View (cartoon, rainbow, N blue to C red):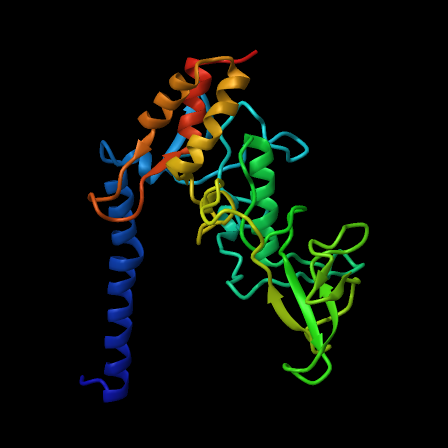
Length: 293
């Protein structure tokens, strides 16, 4: 008995659905799981977990913070780069901050839920903190000495070309001191929370200041990676931390520097990316070779 055309077409579609479900929904995933258990691949398939003294302490692929219960850096450890993934290095919230070069004005508000720091202020604050922690010059162009973006809102009497009537340091509030006392003869005011100086007609003017052109604190110490999970820092960032770590562990800085060199990886395939230092692996090597009480 010949089946109706419409029924034959539906049965053929059902057979195709069943075949591809078995192939792609069962056989293919199981084949990948089996391949992941081959010698040399099983560790990576399981997340490249790192253990110390029989305890899993992290992953070689996902960064982590080395801070105390209050979020302060632990001085005897090398510090990781910032992370914008959740509360930091959260693999379920992997993301960048989505802030760009034009993010220079903070949102100042009496409501903590509404307040937010611009990318510039985040960079300035991180550079200042890293400089203080590691005893290097934390100044950066377009940053104030108190660690916020050095940005003015300049108001003119007639659009963009008239006489300057008012100048506000948009990222500084009381009790701070304006990073410049006057701008082209007009006294500089501190910003007030919940006021939008851009909407009010202020022309935003970043001020470079006298910071060195090449900051002592490297870029990866003040910016998050695109994923927010990068477990590496640059060799330059590692080098400015050597003196602190050596002092805290009471060892020769040259010995710590040698460990940094040992845990520095080169470019992928010799030309892709930049050299990096895996922070977790380096800190574990420090604990093994130079343990502290």
